[in-house]
Length: 537
Image (tube, rainbow, N blue to C red; front, top):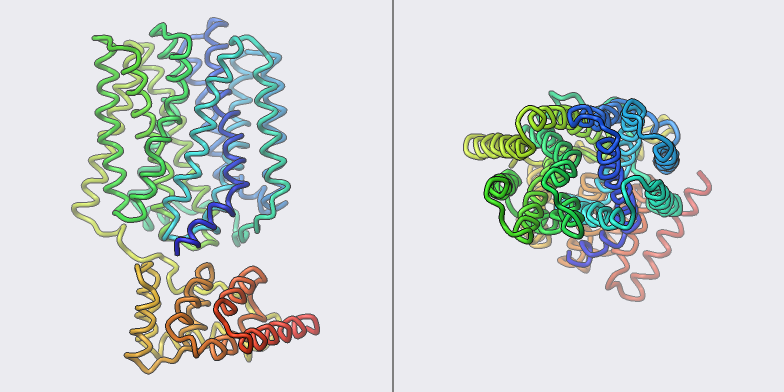
């Protein structure tokens, strides 16, 4: 299992490098634009309104971004979005007009979020419930490193230097090249491009739904307005860079521990802990406004505050993804981005109005209030509801395409459905395996020894029910019953003909692992025969 979990991080390297480059360009926009507009003489409330247009674009991406992916595919859609963002960066270098900036922010929101939907649907296909928390934690760490690097790059220039926009273009183009040259298998396209309905998303995970919206309220206001808060406080030099990058750099403190805990504990408990940490750190930032503390202490508080807020959305995503199938990844991601965008529109507008009408410290009164609300909601869900502990919504779904021959003679889906109904032991086994037990091999062994099932039935149904984990589960079966290796291989014959090459390769490698010379020869002969059958078909 450890080897499998380590391999997943090797496979997703292109996505990790890409999100790093995207994060640098993303934060350079957020740092550069408010300061340029403030220097031009615009009011804080108007700046907040212009920056909130990014969230409007994000909502449009949630509604329509997946259509672009369905039209041209994942790679081309991503390349188009990255190229458009590079053009936007160049246009910004010619003007700081607030209306033009607002329009470009909206287009940028559409492009960024469509790119994120594309990348995160990849991650959902490549991960499963046993490692999804760590995968998304690592993904967010790479985003945090890129996001936190941006202020240090910005410190090399002044706020009116147009070369900053050239730096943004460089990182966007590098990200485009990495993904265009990647050999990652493209996720399965959804049957429809419409986002998942809010009612369906709520039914899967109320806690994940609320957390997505509140993450938008927190993230957008903090990222958009933190530069104005630091500017108003008179912070400068290296400390300004540290504080401007704190919101995402703080994620380095929380993302991987959060993912590790989320894979082992109730995600509502983990999220509640993050909100409690955020309440304490943001309250101390407010305290510093009235009774100044050493700048070193303040920087640490900003890092902790950022770490608590930035980890909320990926944790919400994993809560939802624990209950959906791969084909629902893009519609669900679209809906979550819409919720994040709605929060992103409201957050900067409300926070900037409070800052204009009272004082800049009201940014953090607002942030504390949202943290308190999420903490109370998640605590009540944990105490009085059990929905988060339900098994995945698609536990018994089968991802086998129908045979385009007009016959059902070789359709293993029928056998799977009939066997599952006729054998309650098999249904119980599949349900237990869907919960990612600590020792699947022992569970399979006890089931076979204590029931009328045979290795063939279990092998075929495990592959059908859990295609992404098929190699792992077949490996456990063969480890417990090594003498059944060839019997299992031959029982999967029909599936090898129908399934994708990637899964066939995984099963082939698993069947060969530890096989004798005689068994290796027979298994290879079986696969050669299958290839011959496919070519003739």
